[in-house]
Length: 427
Image (cartoon, rainbow, N blue to C red; front, top):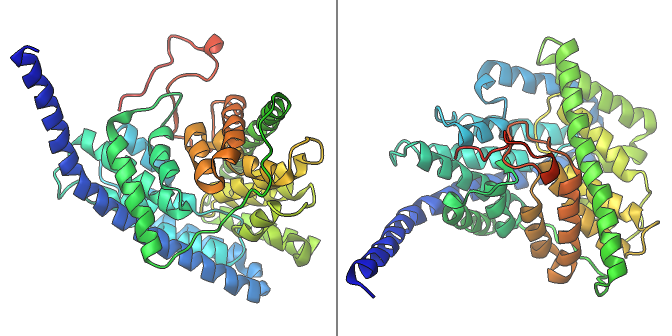
């Protein structure tokens, strides 16, 4: 081998080593910040759920509390109100550091939403805390636009991986969520390092994640493969409907209610009226995170309408301006939809619940790879194979507009409909 080629190869590996050595401590710090914020979030939501269930009258105050959250954002958080979409926009086109006040505002807003009975999730909060805290490191480490993008992606990964206890899925989510159909590997090492450190830190704080067990995974056959595809279509259409319905409610309330803090007041009143009009005993399962119902969907048959009820409660809550996230409600909608599909598809209810758990999210967020990895981490490889098929099919059938406005179309899902205008976003 000529000396110059050997030298070039050695130089390349040396550059990689230097770059990795630089990012290891930064990624670890991002993971520590994001994992600690996720631990605080999870502990606070557990407390909020216990208090609300012990004092159901608090749901009557959901509307007024929504107004308080709206006023807080109007006066102190106008620049960070876009939430996840602001972070994605900054990754695509970095301009200025995300204000650190995003972290306390979203933590408080999410806590109040759950304390008073709103139907919301937690991933949006974890992503925003992880990315906003990570972004504070850009200035002291003198990062330019390219490295700041990587830093934000690592924050997204650390927040997502630590809040769900799925570091592999979190690492890939931070890369995959940016643009439909394209992946950029510039941040792959920082994303993986930050996500795994974040998960370890969350556990170090004494926080334990819910276990979901797929109790029956039959061997894969051609028939079951086809059934998984059919289920994937249903999950994808559900994910698409969720995103479109939430955005439609957002546009509608903005068009008819000019005063932003008034929007969650109206939304909260609608949810409260539904709870007490229908009956608390019939609607309590649709409030908050709904984790007990998700767990139940893996072990017993549930009423077939559960996924639709959670769908409506969540789209009204988030569409009118309450804070939180979409992903845990999507897990609920997906697992209960899968449970319902077991009435017509010859697959075990537990397996279909696991498939729906990740596949509706895969379609709504346009993240089939991260969702498949999540299935493997949560349910194991055998169930993960079925879930992976459902995730890919769900992604293909969910359209090009998911739950995140700022997500770009890097490459269209259907080659026959691609145009010369489709391109990979500049990263």
